[in-house]
Image 1 (cartoon, rainbow over the protein chains, first blue to last red):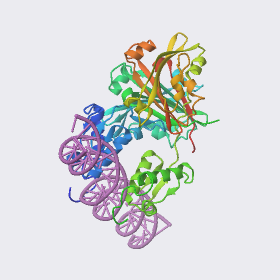
Image 2 (image 1 turned 90 degrees about the vertical axis):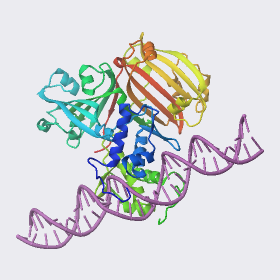
Image 3 (image 1 turned 180 degrees about the vertical axis):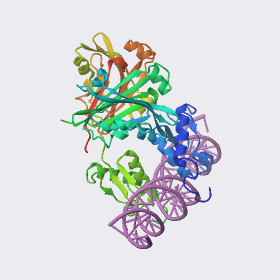
Length: 246
Length: 246
DNA sequence: ACGGCGATTATGTATATACATATTGAAACG
DNA sequence: CGTTTCAATATGTATATACATAATCGCCGT
């Protein structure tokens, strides 16, 4: 610790990241309950064998993310999970997860190309039949499932999506940059997890979930319909605004 | 710059904060358009007469917030804003209900004037203690409960609310028109109904609910915190928006 | 011309250090 | 016994430094 060691000497990621994910894991898993005092900076310093600045930066970030609260002279404490803020912006889940300091991972569950049925057309707002792609995947924050994604892509609008596997990359990031969207509509509601959802998200059947559905258009053409399903505890949408004044 | 100078030597806030606000100001105002290369770290270092670490931390934070993009060897650039925060309308429940073609009714359940406790202050974002008014009421659509409202009013900001009974009129419509609000923040999440909520809304305990919390400010003063609790089946929020630019 | 390779450059991450500031707990005092 | 004061402590913010890493530019040889 006395000299400057090579950056990223350990295995994966930076030390900063490792501290972040270690601590938020402990909090998320419940090992450190709300109110629990987490180790002092100088203790983490010896635990991770690093300088206080490194620990400090990680803890400050957790504080800004709302996971912990810091009190001078007293230490840092796990906060009541009322303010696990995520922002209703672009709704890129990777960014949301990484803002929590957790490693992000995506895993495709299903992929199916088919001729649109009545429900597909309703979801997309299509009048005529055509090819659609159905993709289902799981977003992970660390080891835990963070959100289940169910997506319908209108292949008449985005034919090249038909050649994509979406095995490791979520369809959202793929579509952005390829298809300029001109309009979007969100629907937000609560739902009880059914068998399938509960299984995928590793929660109890019947547990409350937050559902965010988005429909996107590009120049009047329906592009995609996504449904994100979050376990209730893991997610709060935050929207801040000032009056529009007519 | 050669020695360690006293922290916060300048006027208000930290240097970190000043750099942050300066740069986001320039971006938000359009002075630095998307694609514009902002000064290099070493340039800002001389401009603000501070170390690179300080500048680096500020820029990293802006990057994490999505305002800028950083490229090694090339510098930092103002990003294209991908999307905007959703503009949820300030929803008036009477209008929602009447849009469904159902008769609307409001009924007050509880009303309590008290000195703010720690939780009240947290909800309202107050630092000092003071009088608050707690009002709980039910919104009906026809015969069925449509939403449960739990509201906290900061009597320091709106003293005349202390004389109101809110027996037949909900506090929301009363406040609007009386108190011009300058800013609001929504938090949206899912929740399982507890005993109290289930009883009020006439649903089963454990049933999923949509919770919308709103905090309102008027000229920097916290005015009110409301929580609307909807049975999952009865409600879907809709937000529609277009990208701010290409 | 053109493709590869090394030098340069800006950012990324870490260290050790210094001093500020808020809060707590205990000692000193009226 | 209550209050005031003070020192200890943990966090907050800044500095200077060191080395890593990625991307670009320009040189050079074929």
